[in-house]
Amino acid sequence: MAQYNWLEAINVTEEMLIETDNRLPVIWISALDCTGCKEAFIRSFEPSTLDTILNFISLEYSELLSAASGDQIEAHKESIFEKYKGEYVLAVEGSIPGSDEFLLIAGKSVREEIIHAAKHAKAVIAFGSCSAWGGIPAAGLNPTNAVDIRAIIPEDVPVALVPGCPPIPEVIIGTLLHVHFHGELPELDKKLRPKVFYQTTVHMTCHRKPLFDQKLFAQSYDDEGARKGYCLFKIGCKGPTAFNACESLGYDRCISAGFSCIGCSEKGFWDKGGFCSKRKK
Ligand code: SF4
Ligand code: SF4
Image 1 (tube, helix red, strand yellow):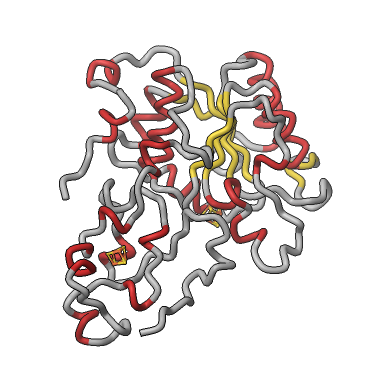
Image 2: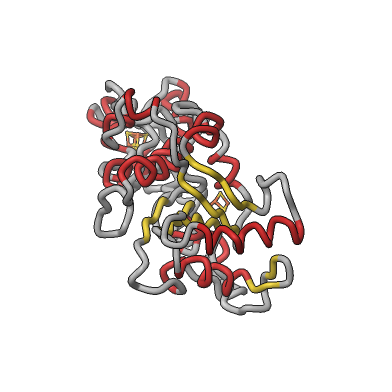
């Protein structure tokens, strides 16, 4: 299947890429996370994260990525809230603990800090399944009473969910670039995900789909069918119910590597079996 041009999909032309004035201020706050979403953020190829940071967005605060630290970066964050009131994007990674005391950064409750930062944000973007749905911290017994971003921010703040564990790098960058170039979030679906990236299932664009249609299935990860690259549906592939752009953006590494899609962009994927589920033959 031909890959789509995602820059075209978010209506960004070559000419617009040349225009580099007024970078979009971004504050990136991490709560109950593993840093995997930031790892994804720094790995976009087209445009590269480097180009994006140098030309289109200004990453004003990130506990991990900012060169400054301690009081200096905390003071800078506060100054950005004032200087770019209503203009900055608040990126949130990780779910939010139920108790204020559970997670502190610079002596302040992360929960309170996110609420504070969201108040004057142009938009809030939840990067990753943890901030979008609760993710791993909210799975099972949920010992920290973790919640997703929408549980704590005011309803009138525009919010987009960009799930995935982690999300696809180009989807992170594409969502930010849409705000930069168009001044608003991309069109969202009913679950608040950017339609352009979450409009179809992994299955519908999967390179193994012709094998699914021919009913050629691997029955285990080490059988002859698996070696021949047959469809992984019978060994638990969640591609048919996972809305994400992995295959269409060329991030089909799970399935290309011979491992089934675990549906990491879907709500509650850990509680629905994660890596372990297997369909009956
Ligand atoms: S969504 Fe996945 S990669 Fe991102 S913080 Fe949560 S566990 Fe880590
Ligand atoms: S491997 Fe998974 S996503 Fe691909 S065709 Fe089979 S069931 Fe669908």
